[in-house]
Image 1 (cartoon, one colour):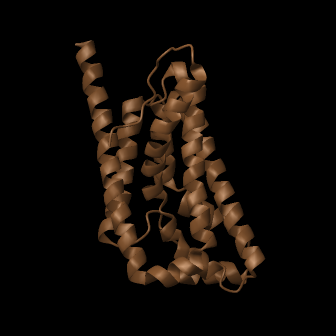
Image 2 (cartoon, rainbow, N blue to C red):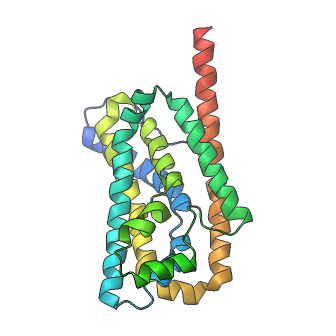
Image 3 (cartoon, rainbow, N blue to C red):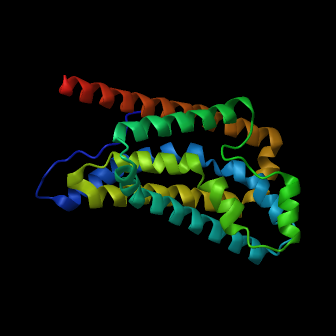
Length: 237
């Protein structure tokens, strides 16, 4: 998969250029983020927590969880450059570190059959439910949907936005994040149907497929970061 990077082109038709970039890169961003978010891994947790809730309250929890996940990822997208500047981290370093984190999570999905963000076990979920807490922010939004892996992916994409396309680039990333969160919302809303249709083995199979795709994304991030390190060192020498 070619890493997404807006081409810093200057043309009179700015709107046409934005639409072209959006059509080209929004699917890349969505396909890169969807495997790490893996809404199917959140379905069992969501079903456990909402087992005794009314349909209205269950839908509200799904809606709030996805809204919080979008806000969390958006915040890290816009604050990512500030974090980089504060700690003196290079952009290639961010890409390599994000790729390594994603690869570890992908291996967990491939070889252990677990979700990528350390899902809460059934006992913990039962305690949360009995306490009648609003769990839309935690554990559903964070860390299940918007965990370290998803944050790393969004920050990696944000680091590839060229200076000449800062506004357009952030809008395109936000569109990709919004589409991914919308897919997660659909998965949570139809969680009962998905669980019955796929079954436990089906969900594990889809998780492993997403783990493989996620491994490919991680390798691409690491390769891109190493390449930029080599180019920068060559320029210095």
